[in-house]
Length: 155
Image (tube, rainbow, N blue to C red; front, top):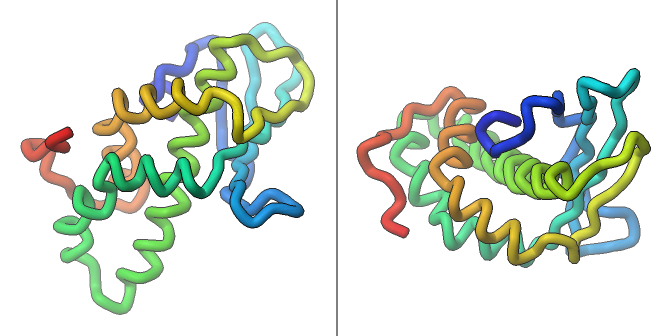
């Protein structure tokens, strides 16, 4: 996914865990990523936070479920609910990964760190909207869903 979202090839990034609610909040999610720069001897963990409001707004602006609804019809009804829940988790992972890319571009030091929900808000909106097709394709790929590439988002 690092290539999809414009990550530097000098970094290797993997999702460690998440999304999960940030302890003590009811409206902030976080994903934790393992990040290793080629020049570092060891990797770091970066917690990336995002508000539920920003997730909901981006989901709406991307028309996420509209874009994936046809592909979901090919899934057995008893499996559809679990798949829809996984879509939500994958979407948050994709969006927080985009935010991590913004953090990498700003510069990361070789220490565990976090990117707060209030950081890069407008920049993240622009990046996700600019990469909407990659976000949708990533989710579909992770779920093994076939999407019609000839019907891009009308946004």
